[in-house]
Amino acid sequence: MPKVDSISAEKILNSRGDWTIKVNVVSDKGNQESFSVPEGKSRGSMEARIINPDKAIDLINKKIAKEFRGFDFTDQSRVDARLIELDGTKNKSNLGSNTILGVSFALARLAAKEEGVPFWKYISKLSKAKVSDKKPQIFANMINGGVHADNNLDIQEFLLLTKNSTFRKSVEKIVKVFQQIKLDLENTTSIAVGDEGGFAVSFRTDGAAIKYLHSFAKKNNLGVGIDAAANNLNWINLRSKMFYKRIHNKFGVSYIEDPFRENEARHFSKLVSKFGKSLSVSGDDLTVTSSSLIEEAHQMSAINAVIIKPNQIGTLTEALEAVKLARKYEYQIIASHRSGETNDTSIVDFAVGIAADGIKIGAPNRGERVAKYNRLLEIEGELKGRR
Ligand code: PGA
Ligand code: ZN
Image 1 (cartoon, helix red, strand yellow):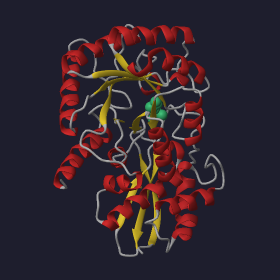
Image 2 (cartoon, rainbow, N blue to C red; image 1 turned 180 degrees about the vertical axis):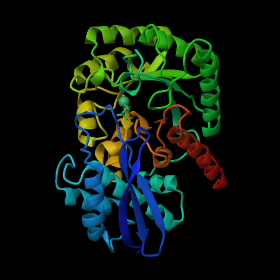
Image 3 (cartoon, protein in one colour; image 1 turned 120 degrees about the horizontal axis):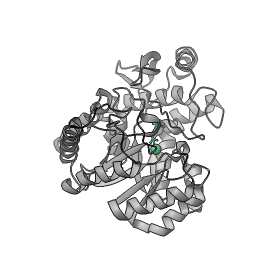
């Protein structure tokens, strides 16, 4: 059995210029891997707790390295159980979710390397998913608003959704439309971008931004969606409800994430019962990749789609448990990056490996987002090589 030889951590910058951690691991056979931890800005209150990167690095270099020396890292559930035990809290506030996720994913990547398989393949074995070059579809954040941009838009993300295409065709289409929008905007306004690489321009209203995106979607056979990130939205619920009805009926918006605040599940339920399968009502801050919160949302029929972000819960094993539950309830599953990213592309392998229906990787712009698009293309090649 391969064993951990060493674990160490270092401080690196993320896409916002904030400090985060990179965890480096080495096996007793001399194989090396690493993982860099992303960080959200519009977080749910029930997400596992992040700790200061300096403290995280200290914990990894002094405590965790010692605990894991000689540990068989090819059993991911044992690795993660040990991390959870060492932390000893419900919300991972002792070691920090960034510390724990860093070690969990770095060791998973090392296990894949030890087996000689790409990371998505290793994930697919753990999640028992049937991978395909059409899963996930891309949920591309073309216009950024809310806390991710300095414009006048309240809604956080205005998304274009690819439909049933291979990774390459999806990427090509999103890139083509991104360039079309850029050309169009250049004529009238500045083309500043937000945290996730989408345009951060102002529109007359949020509805006008959706109408604008819809015109490009129609021409290119793409879907339209939004992440309202309603924890940060100060609209009254009546206004939101009327707005969602209007954009669904008028502009074919088929995906709405966090339409209401995380403590307003009953309003989510009303949307689900009103629109049924024609609208994906997705939980992000509501469910934070936690099996128990997904279960609660299910009890209330509050969602029919769910965001999976491994760093919301802290370990790969728990993220896979959330996926399993979401699958059982036949939810649409969307794996997601965070607004504060590095060039790490593990989230793409994760999405392919669980055969997620969708993946949020921002717009094809800014190095840390482009890295994810490129990884998707690379994986399509790896999939073909294995047919
Ligand atoms: P965050 O936002 O990464 O800034 O938390 C992403 C989202 O709300 O989906
Ligand atoms: Zn969200």
